[in-house]
Image (cartoon, rainbow, N blue to C red; front, side, top):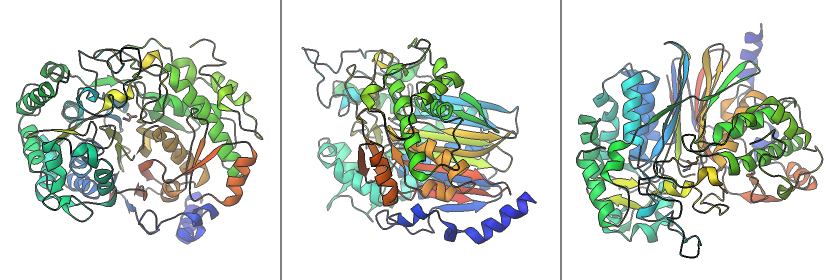
Amino acid sequence: MLRTIYLIISVFCLWGCSHPQLKHLDFKAWERTPDCCSASGKSVGVASGGTFSSKAGLEIAQLGGNVVDIAVATAFALAVERPHSLGLGGGGFLTLYLADEKPTTIFVDFRETAPAKANPTMFLGPKGNLISGLSRYGILSVATPGFVPGLFTIHQKWGKLPWKTILRPAIHLAQKGFPIYLSLAKAIEEEREHLLKEPYTASLLFNKRGLLKTGDTLIQEDLARTLERVSKNPSWEFKTGTTAKLIDRFVREKGGILSISDLAHYRPEFRAPINHRWKDFVFVTAPPPSAGGVIMTEMLQTLAKDDLSHLSETDYLHLLTEAMKRAYSDRSRFIGDPDFSHEDITSLLTAEYGASLRKTISLDQATPAKEISPGAGLPKMGDHTTHLSVMDAAGNGAAMTLTINDHFGSRLAVPGTGIFLNDEMDDFSAKIGAPNLFGLLGGKANQIEPQKRPASSMSPTLLIKNGKVILSVGAAGGSKITSNTFEVILNVLFRFPNDLKHSVFAPRIHHQWSPDELQVEAGFLPAVISGLKEKGHNLREVDKAAIVQATFVDPLGNITAVYDPRDEGGAEAK
Ligand code: GLY
């Protein structure tokens, strides 16, 4: 009976049943139309930040690949299609659930790691002042990449198709090229000054007529050759092979500290994900060094007793903002690499702590951020980056977020390889209490130490119901990754039930405690905006929220893949 009602509502409700606020979405600014960005099927769905990358994932599915094969192939294709967001010079996180093996939740951390020669004062001047830009631009900003060792290990453990088959679509894409799309063209234009400093880096993104522009074809011959070497020698190409030697030589010439020994010693870490039982679901998400899972679980606990389906839009956004402020405040103090930091995060995840935070929230009035301090009440304790989501009808799911941090990372490409090196050292607290690229403050838990991993916002998340993944979701967008991933989860469960497309499209907010401002995207009804102002929120309108990719299976077994209309992407399903 329920299924029939659901079917009737779905058939009659398509776009016509839109929530009133969605009528204000600015599709023109996104260069999209309302019918974009999704695909449906019965057996598999892939959503990612790349048109050709999602197609690469589907190609692997059609060859009989499992969710791990699909995710790894999509990730390598993304490294070609989004050189400004991720790549072989970066790293990432994977949250995985394999329903058809011994059902288990898995988290793999293949994040970049501080080189052995890194130290807490490496970005400070003689008077302890932060040297502007050093942690973001140039060779000292580079941490040891984990992309290739991470994905190879993941594939070895859980993949099904041969490794060479998995890399084939990425190699073809690099050789054949693809037309430059809007956000890539913008990233090249914005980073022009830095990219032009190094002749090899410049040669990758400029042709005889100058800077590559929308519609020009980007062919990456060196990257194709590097991928071919990785395809032949996956276990040592990034440790002692040709690519490792080229990276080592380049870093030494530039006066950096990353060495071939750092590359040879890099190991992905298998960590226990945060598994939080919540209503009928198990919410599986990223543990530290990501702050994502801690922040989202803390917010879930804070809002656990609120009726999120029936609150007015203004009250809902107000409550969410207040929960965000408190959780992001805790991020600043407690999150760091768990192999180094001794902060106990378990108390942050409890129902008691959530309830104690909820008591401090008034439904009428915003709390000024300066009145919130990390851990108060505790018993004691873009479109950089990109995301891909995969799921199948058997209930298996993968959520993977990948990054090189800033656009084009350190803005340095290693001659002969086509690889942009990350600037992930900026995700550490370069100086305690000083904001990083995303305005995030960090404490001692996230201070630079050799071979430590910097705190992250990346939040690849799965929602499991009755032993099957029903939602795979995550985002790109710095500190907004966590808040926006969380908003889409609440949307699909409470605000736009079972409707993934509207859940991803809907305008979003972000508050990260410091600075004390509520970022709001265009598209909210004017009455909602004035309601939030009346409650005392300090609003700042922003062009774009984080970029979310997701796949979802509805109660009828239809799998929907949706990429975010705010940026380039691809959604495929069959
Ligand atoms: N580099 C962005 C993050 O890991 O949060």
